[in-house]
Length: 345
Length: 173
Image (cartoon, rainbow over all chains, first blue to last red):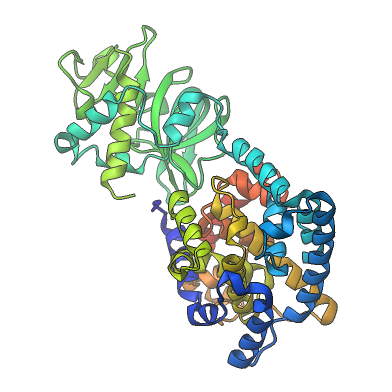
């Protein structure tokens, strides 16, 4: 189950509660597939008896019958053996498949079910299936381009699953202060193009970053972040520490700086998962500078920067660490996945 | 429901095992019902169409091809059924019925903005915004799938969704 924010969760609950239980009615309309020849007619009769309402099925049946006849004619010409292979075919089936065909064809909405059935008939079931395969392949091709991104987004373990292991193994160590990583919707490398003051409706000072997405390492199957792609410009809103001079803000990402930022969505805006501390910065030598919070990413080879040093991002709340190995991103992604999994999403 | 479980359920249906349909129904009845309701805006019609959808799924299970994204597949079919129904109803009933609220609530009233319910807040959205919100949240579709289904650019769909969510939040402040 995916995590939903407040409005989404409430919407889902409301719609779920609003949906009536129709199972008995549906079940009463089911007949074994071998007997579906007259099934629909009896469905309509059953529904009328039970509800006293008209389902508009007779007219559909007319369309469906016409479509079925058309489909049969096409099929008879194209494949004489079809009737032997598809004894269960019904007008209902043809129309249902037609809907699928419409989906395969790019969700073109047919004017009527008859037209839809004709679309299926024209393509034939196999044609629809073939089209479906092409669409499926296209859909399987991730929207974000790179194979690595696809791998992360699909939830597969990284090729080297050291990261996953590292994350899983160290959850106990960092679970109290890293746990918010479970809220990560997007982990990307960004270059900060502009940073400016912003004030949200709550009156608290915010910094508005205009950033270019250099790379995407992790993406949840999320509501708001799906449209983000490598090369996009995005807006990141982050709480400021209240310092009057923005340039003195101790957590601020610098213009021109390159950062790895776990992002979440709050109030419809992208915001760092940890807004009240320095973000992970990529130094010119390729090293990753990260704050204390990421305890699981600290290993024996991690260098510790002095508090408030030039390289220490001026972090007043603790030490800053630096790692220069290539596994850093993999470990971080593994950590996010581990916390996400542990949160039950 | 995972794609694998859905495919297994479809296989059960093909063997005349109702449990397969039951599983799909339990997972997706609210999704299908709310999707068709967003189009027909009438409870009785939505119930009829939802029932009909699952009966047709039972009858046509063997036309499903796995790996195509079953939610988008089902929603496309349900949506087309609802649109067909709507077109016919409009032909038969030239005077359009007033839309009905899903929980029988009155239309949104600005006078009670401070205590507005989500159902009322939804009334402030445009039709296409409501449908996108529904497909996104209940259908759990990607913006790309929604864009394909509605025939709109992906960016438009994403923007529309965010705008709608923002509106809902603002109305409910």
